[in-house]
Length: 462
Ligand SMILES: Cc1cc2nc3c(=O)[nH]c(=O)nc-3n(C[C@H](O)[C@H](O)[C@H](O)COP(=O)(O)OP(=O)(O)OC[C@H]3O[C@@H](n4cnc5c(N)ncnc54)[C@H](O)[C@@H]3O)c2cc1C
Image (tube, rainbow, N blue to C red; front, side):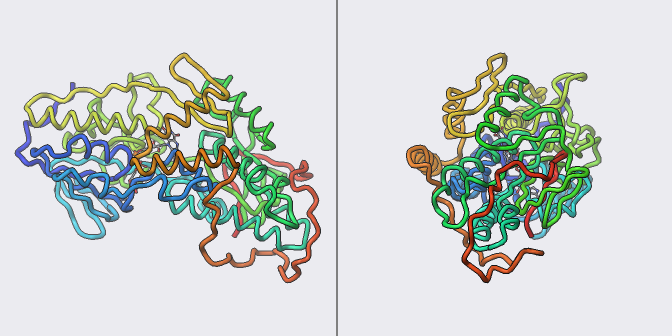
């Protein structure tokens, strides 16, 4: 049991940083509790259901299908004020948060600003290998994917064809696996008959993982199932492979060089830089080591939850993973602790209930692990669909996603295939597109003479 402070004066000025899963869970649980005057601050005006971001990136869903304005989510919570602002720092001594629209004072603070992509010291790769964290990222990736097919259709040089139609996904965790599977469906089914000079089915898809297996957080049998299924869909799975360079033209794996215009980064993450504002112990990825009640040791008025928190059930166990159910349960626990405190009761330690994990590979194949139960295949896929539909925020979104999924299931079509930005600048080194007459490129999907390698980085087009 961690000591809280004496019951707070009412109303307690509670400030929540981050309107993701953790932050909104706190706000919703304390909605209309007159003892709390809540301010929730996020740099975005919307909540995103991140597990379905890859479907926006691969044109299966539109951005509005998986997001909802935070203000709308909390419109019935009369004690919650939502501010769109960038939080720039936290002063725990003054109980103040600094933002780009001015300071905000608090009595209690919840920090739920999550994580951001990490390129493991190679930030120069970022422009060529976008990561997937926000709706803007998903839109960028989608436009690059669709744009690559447009350029391949127009470019006469077969080598450039092959380069444009080579997609490298870096990182074999759930996001990388789901992206690779979705790319396989996009290229093999959806786009198969839409072009005249290229055959999208010949696109080369690479999934590169530095570790010895995909989905390392799952049981080994499920990793093997995911690997085999991806291979059967035409994805080249490279394990134990560490990227050494990413440029606008190619990716490198040690001595090997693969010309590739499209790279997606699904590898590492690091803590939100706001964690550095707190005088607290942090783990190597920057996450804050929290006390049993999720407060920051030495600062009982500050909580850290979700992806940003490092919390271990027991001293010798591993920290909880950065997944949605952890953030949700932590948010609920902090809300309960604040209520306890307001009622003069001590706060209780957090306990996590593991509901399992799942990842989808493609039509009729997913893997799921629920305690000692393990599923791979069609049943897991239907379960995945059901669970993600249930957890999606907003009735309208659930209906829209259900409709898009049903339509895609019946027709193999993907509706969100528009490129809305102006045509991208010509690629460095790409031949001119002046000659629209093109002959079909040699199979870009054929095993490459150039090998592949490494761990997580990737390469991408300019
Ligand atoms: C592509 C992808 C797929 C995923 N798939 C799954 C899955 O299938 N299952 C699963 O359980 N989990 C999945 N996750 C993980 C899950 O989404 C996270 O664990 C969860 O969202 C963490 O919640 P959080 O509240 O800690 O942070 P987030 O939900 O990330 O929210 C953080 C919020 O803080 C805001 N913010 C950050 N910094 C600032 C700042 N300085 N100022 C203002 N606002 C700021 C951000 O805009 C964001 O809204 C996935 C994540 C990603 C990226």
